[in-house]
Image (cartoon, rainbow, N blue to C red; front, side):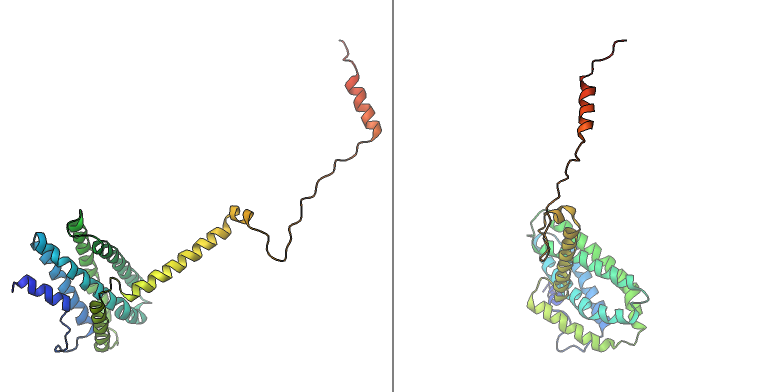
Length: 241
């Protein structure tokens, strides 16, 4: 069996099989990074159909890796060190979001589509940057905490196995976030409509209140003497100079 094919199969099923010793959370993350980067290198060193066969395996690996970080690792570590550096987690989640957008687009494309290869290369560059940031900042912070990294590793392994076996395109955490974003957008839209003067003008009166008709202003009566004087002024001939 060719080395590239073997590593691709290993990347899909992962190294966390029942015969392997349990891995800590940091080992899970670093191993996932290594597998993804090997798949990127295989894509770049191959051509044609062989190159494009790598893509589905890389996407499955990324989706599972993202799920185990977002569901287990990020929330637990954030409770410990998030107050000191909240932007570290916010930026990591935004980088995940960018990767998910590209993954979703690639999953809806055929390998022969225009810009398929270019889109995957952009995804690879984004993920490589994310890996550098995570391994230089976040993982060292985790090593300095009292987190039970062995227990976290077991929980992360279960999430990864669940996602890989179910074949879901998106992890549960993304679906929950999407629902929250949708609810937030709905509330914002409703608030904007309430603030709109046009909307208020067209709205019926609230229950319990009746709109009063506009009162007509009556013309003030003019005294008869004043009318006579006005007629006299209008009929008086113009004086000749």
